[in-house]
Figure (spheres, rainbow, N blue to C red):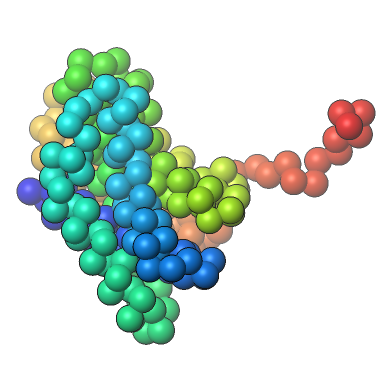
Length: 207
């Protein structure tokens, strides 16, 4: 129940973030709704296709399409005021990232996959919606840059699966992974933790 509630809040927030980027790119209403929905549901869709897990999440629950589309449309009317909620968006995004990750891990484990594949399934669920959004908006994907984002997903997924392997209940493991993952993400933002970047590396001889 906790994960489901966070998931619904997260897909709405992600749809709104996708809609904002689409608006910045000058897209029409269809484009705004499309980018918003892909941002919110794209990671789970890619995961289900890779794992041959059918029906795909939004096909089984078509109401998710309604929620994300309405969220994208609502964003077009409220975008001027959303900058006041930037910090809230960051917190919800962190919660969503970890919730998506845990859900992806559960689906992988339920399919009898090796724990390492389950962790990757969680990471795909968590980050690929944003990756697709950035690609469709002709922007270098955030997850492929220096910012600590995918690492949060991998760490939370690994911690969650490890707790399950140690016999800790799914509910307790979910709460612990959520708390730890969100804390990791917030600390990374606050202290600007980054992975090494090779933007200015010397490539002479490879031209």
